[in-house]
Image (tube, rainbow, N blue to C red):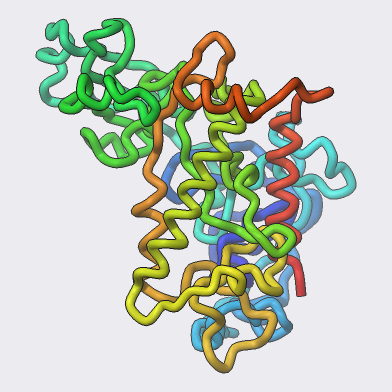
Length: 392
């Protein structure tokens, strides 16, 4: 699928474009059942039909100079301009599965979850998926070793394909994985050499062991009762950062929404403080980059809500409407990924009192009249991001 904003990361909502040649070859029209598939295979939904016939008259880059392309590198925008690549425009979605459609967008059917972006696939036939990844080579040995916990043939990432995961059992509690908890010094020693491994369909069924992000491959089995802190890249809201919104990521999956720490005020405070700490580390890391005299007060100056911080300023000669979506300095650009590795914390449930909970007990007095609604926070962040993209 193509979009004028292919240089960015905006997701399709209720309309988009496909190449005319593809639409003709596949015979796609208003009555054709279609399926949308992420390019990495992590999500496939359907069937859908279009609310209207596909429109013609467009081509790649036709609208690149109507203001939509102002926020991108102008040389890249020029490269998009290709009248020889005609497009078909689709508008509005229908589906026999109402769960796939946004219930609040009835005037013109839209995706319930805006996850598809330019470069993902539109199919005229349902995608046939394998039923299971193959187990790792040493699987029989892992199953027979009492020092490991294994998770065999379960769908661990929500795509209905069986995956495999294993972990070193915690000597303190052998029915759980041994994790180095940020707020449990003893676990740092006890689990120093612990192993976490996965073979996941969303990771191409490749075997992965002890990578920095391994906990996020299967957090529902590795850390089902823990808070796992991983934050969105610093974004601007009201001219500054908002650690609460960085902690509640717009891309949160079902597991993240069900984290026990997100169900309590103390748990949400844990994640918020974790993200605040990571943002402070990011500031110091950027300042260490050669030639980067970063003034953080300038990072959100004039930046629409939901856009990434403008580290390094805007490239010379670009429009005042231009907003870079990665730091313009290469050193600064690499720092956030280095800093935002998953941090496993004690559970946010009141029945679990870790060091962070004890600290919070002296800072959070009383209870709110009403617990913040997680779905509302996610929606608020998603809408802010969309508004930031649409700002002129």
